Length: 150
Ligand SMILES: [Cu+2]
Image (cartoon, rainbow, N blue to C red; front, side):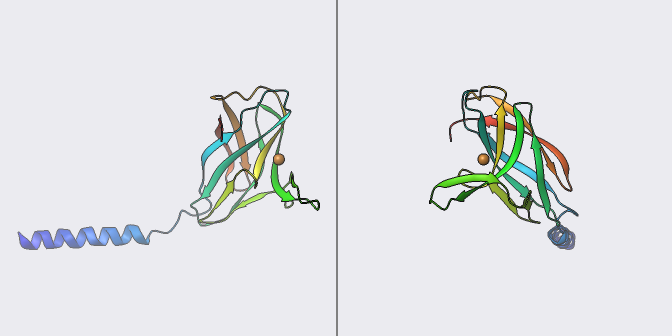
Protein backbone atom coordinates (compact mmCIF):
# COMPACT_ATOMS: atom_id res chain seq x y z
CA UNK A 1 0.00 0.00 0.00
CA UNK A 2 2.85 2.33 0.82
CA UNK A 3 4.22 1.82 -2.68
CA UNK A 4 0.87 2.76 -4.15
CA UNK A 5 0.79 6.05 -2.28
CA UNK A 6 4.39 6.74 -3.24
CA UNK A 7 3.54 6.13 -6.91
CA UNK A 8 0.45 8.29 -6.58
CA UNK A 9 2.52 11.03 -4.98
CA UNK A 10 5.01 10.92 -7.84
CA UNK A 11 2.23 11.08 -10.42
CA UNK A 12 0.67 14.11 -8.69
CA UNK A 13 4.07 15.80 -8.46
CA UNK A 14 4.72 15.17 -12.14
CA UNK A 15 1.29 16.44 -13.13
CA UNK A 16 1.88 19.60 -11.09
CA UNK A 17 5.26 20.10 -12.75
CA UNK A 18 3.78 19.61 -16.20
CA UNK A 19 1.01 22.12 -15.66
CA UNK A 20 3.50 24.62 -14.20
CA UNK A 21 5.66 24.19 -17.30
CA UNK A 22 2.80 24.92 -19.65
CA UNK A 23 3.56 28.22 -21.32
CA UNK A 24 1.16 31.10 -21.88
CA UNK A 25 -1.38 30.57 -24.67
CA UNK A 26 0.00 31.04 -28.17
CA UNK A 27 -0.73 34.48 -29.54
CA UNK A 28 -2.53 37.17 -27.55
CA UNK A 29 -5.20 36.25 -24.95
CA UNK A 30 -7.21 39.39 -24.22
CA UNK A 31 -9.68 39.83 -21.38
CA UNK A 32 -11.39 42.98 -20.14
CA UNK A 33 -12.31 43.78 -16.54
CA UNK A 34 -14.35 46.45 -14.81
CA UNK A 35 -15.50 48.48 -17.81
CA UNK A 36 -17.34 51.58 -16.61
CA UNK A 37 -18.23 55.18 -17.38
CA UNK A 38 -19.41 58.22 -15.44
CA UNK A 39 -23.07 59.19 -15.49
CA UNK A 40 -23.95 62.25 -17.57
CA UNK A 41 -27.06 63.62 -19.28
CA UNK A 42 -27.31 63.50 -23.06
CA UNK A 43 -26.66 67.27 -23.27
CA UNK A 44 -23.08 66.53 -22.24
CA UNK A 45 -21.99 65.53 -25.71
CA UNK A 46 -19.07 63.31 -24.74
CA UNK A 47 -18.29 60.71 -22.11
CA UNK A 48 -15.26 58.59 -21.23
CA UNK A 49 -15.02 54.85 -20.62
CA UNK A 50 -12.44 53.15 -18.43
CA UNK A 51 -11.37 49.51 -17.99
CA UNK A 52 -8.50 47.13 -17.44
CA UNK A 53 -7.42 45.23 -20.55
CA UNK A 54 -5.31 42.16 -19.79
CA UNK A 55 -3.28 39.99 -22.11
CA UNK A 56 -2.32 36.60 -20.70
CA UNK A 57 -1.00 35.45 -24.06
CA UNK A 58 2.53 35.17 -25.44
CA UNK A 59 2.10 37.88 -28.05
CA UNK A 60 1.29 41.60 -27.79
CA UNK A 61 -1.95 42.94 -29.26
CA UNK A 62 -3.21 46.44 -29.96
CA UNK A 63 -6.57 48.06 -29.42
CA UNK A 64 -7.16 49.94 -32.66
CA UNK A 65 -10.77 51.16 -32.56
CA UNK A 66 -14.16 51.00 -30.91
CA UNK A 67 -17.82 51.52 -31.65
CA UNK A 68 -21.05 51.66 -29.66
CA UNK A 69 -24.73 52.22 -30.43
CA UNK A 70 -24.60 54.82 -27.62
CA UNK A 71 -21.93 56.93 -29.33
CA UNK A 72 -21.77 58.68 -32.68
CA UNK A 73 -18.01 58.21 -32.69
CA UNK A 74 -15.60 56.32 -30.45
CA UNK A 75 -11.99 57.47 -30.14
CA UNK A 76 -8.98 56.18 -28.21
CA UNK A 77 -7.70 59.04 -26.06
CA UNK A 78 -4.78 59.86 -23.83
CA UNK A 79 -4.52 62.56 -21.18
CA UNK A 80 -1.59 64.95 -21.24
CA UNK A 81 -0.31 68.10 -19.62
CA UNK A 82 -0.73 71.20 -21.78
CA UNK A 83 1.98 73.88 -22.05
CA UNK A 84 -0.13 75.96 -19.65
CA UNK A 85 0.02 73.15 -17.10
CA UNK A 86 -3.61 72.15 -17.50
CA UNK A 87 -4.89 68.63 -18.13
CA UNK A 88 -5.88 68.03 -21.73
CA UNK A 89 -6.77 65.02 -23.79
CA UNK A 90 -6.29 64.00 -27.39
CA UNK A 91 -6.46 60.93 -29.65
CA UNK A 92 -3.60 58.54 -28.80
CA UNK A 93 -0.52 59.68 -30.71
CA UNK A 94 0.33 56.18 -31.99
CA UNK A 95 -3.25 55.62 -33.15
CA UNK A 96 -3.54 52.47 -30.99
CA UNK A 97 -3.18 51.24 -27.41
CA UNK A 98 -0.73 48.37 -27.02
CA UNK A 99 -1.49 45.49 -24.65
CA UNK A 100 1.90 43.83 -24.04
CA UNK A 101 2.29 40.04 -23.90
CA UNK A 102 1.69 38.92 -20.32
CA UNK A 103 0.80 42.51 -19.41
CA UNK A 104 -2.09 44.92 -19.30
CA UNK A 105 -3.25 48.39 -20.26
CA UNK A 106 -5.12 50.32 -17.61
CA UNK A 107 -7.62 52.85 -18.94
CA UNK A 108 -8.30 55.20 -16.05
CA UNK A 109 -9.21 58.75 -15.05
CA UNK A 110 -6.31 61.05 -15.93
CA UNK A 111 -4.77 58.50 -18.31
CA UNK A 112 -5.73 56.46 -21.31
CA UNK A 113 -9.47 56.22 -21.93
CA UNK A 114 -12.06 55.52 -24.58
CA UNK A 115 -13.96 58.61 -25.65
CA UNK A 116 -17.61 58.42 -26.60
CA UNK A 117 -18.28 61.43 -28.84
CA UNK A 118 -21.73 62.63 -29.92
CA UNK A 119 -23.53 60.65 -27.25
CA UNK A 120 -26.84 59.31 -28.46
CA UNK A 121 -28.43 58.74 -25.05
CA UNK A 122 -28.35 59.71 -21.37
CA UNK A 123 -25.76 57.87 -19.33
CA UNK A 124 -27.85 57.15 -16.23
CA UNK A 125 -26.48 55.40 -13.16
CA UNK A 126 -27.15 51.68 -13.51
CA UNK A 127 -27.33 51.76 -17.30
CA UNK A 128 -25.29 49.22 -19.24
CA UNK A 129 -23.98 50.22 -22.66
CA UNK A 130 -22.46 47.82 -25.16
CA UNK A 131 -19.04 48.78 -26.50
CA UNK A 132 -17.34 46.80 -29.25
CA UNK A 133 -13.56 47.03 -29.30
CA UNK A 134 -11.43 45.97 -32.23
CA UNK A 135 -7.99 44.49 -31.58
CA UNK A 136 -5.41 44.11 -34.31
CA UNK A 137 -4.98 40.36 -33.77
CA UNK A 138 -7.85 39.28 -31.51
CA UNK A 139 -10.53 40.96 -33.61
CA UNK A 140 -13.75 42.33 -32.13
CA UNK A 141 -14.77 41.99 -28.48
CA UNK A 142 -17.96 43.46 -27.01
CA UNK A 143 -18.01 44.54 -23.37
CA UNK A 144 -20.72 46.01 -21.15
CA UNK A 145 -19.96 49.50 -19.90
CA UNK A 146 -21.50 50.00 -16.47
CA UNK A 147 -22.54 53.59 -15.77
CA UNK A 148 -21.69 54.46 -12.17
CA UNK A 149 -20.02 57.03 -9.92
CA UNK A 150 -16.24 56.57 -9.71
CU1 LIG B 1 -11.01 61.95 -24.07
